[in-house]
Image 1 (spheres, rainbow, N blue to C red):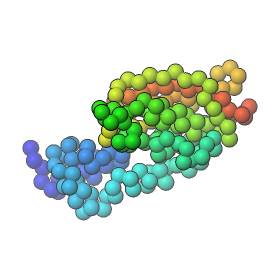
Image 2: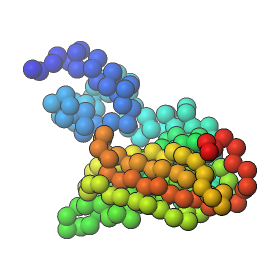
Image 3: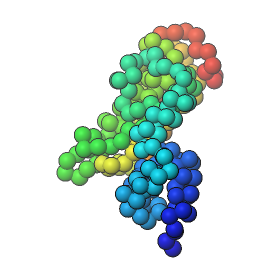
Image 4: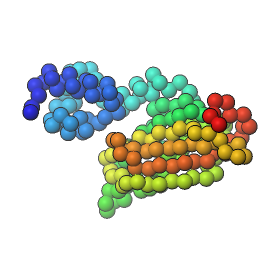
Amino acid sequence: MKRNKKERQSMLKETIEEKPFITDDALAKLFKVSIQTIRLDRMELNIPELRERIKSVATSTWNETVKALPIDEVIGEIIDLELDQRAISILDITAEHVFSRNKIARGHHLFAQANSLAVAVINDQLALTTNADIKFTRQVVEGERVIAKAKVVGTEINNRTVVEVHSHVDNETVFTGIFEMFRSKEEKEGIQQ
């Protein structure tokens, strides 16, 4: 059933409030209209494009700074960070990330996003990966958006911090990893034992 413009715009606004990182393409498919219609609706509703929404969410929720590596060395865009607790990053898979013949993302990009997020969540000037148990659960293709979520889950012997990372496309898991991280500080305040 085709919705009228007012209904569609109302539902569009609600959808974007619930899922601020949804793409125009996904919205067009959801509402069975063209991408241009979605863009026009967003403009009429004064809803910024995706990149601006990401920056807005990051600015309003992210009040900590990455300590263990320069921010430009993080693979993907960090949109949420609470040191020694959790972090979230987004990586849009483009032509530079995929094999040219089949448009499937190279695994090292997914690993790099997860690993750099595991490093970034550590509240220390030095954080190095000492061990990683990883699993790719499905292929990622050009045009998909990978959202990685890191969570500090505790410490191991030798004062290593354990970080769990789950990467998703939409609501489907595409990568999981448990990273054992070395850090230079002996004290790890706030980490659950």
